[in-house]
Image (cartoon, rainbow, N blue to C red):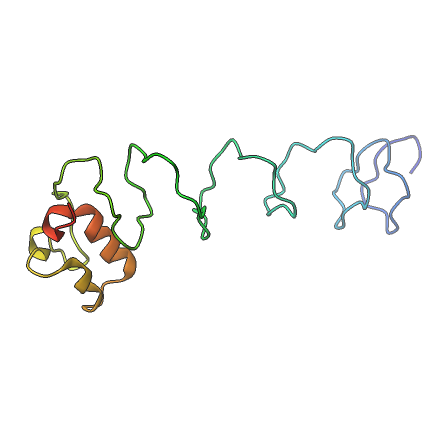
Length: 144
């Protein structure tokens, strides 16, 4: 096609230089040349090179490899991913069980007070379930 108009079909052979006007249909292969500026649409995949700083938006999925060094000061809220073991120092909040807590068996914190909370792993609780029990039932578990 002449006249500078885009063709209705991609050419079978890529050009050495990009055309002055875009084609009507996208090609099935990358161009092989980099552009001066980004296209404005995210690729949807992971980048091959990490960024130099944090992203402005949080990831929808937590990392499976958390940061190895704890922060210098405790946060204002409990972590959504508790550690597997209780900390050596008590938390700043009052020593009270979460009245909304229910184990997978439907038991409240008070139901767990008769046995050491860490022993519930032997009863089939996962590490995350035992950690949640220790975090949300500190009075019943005797961790505060």
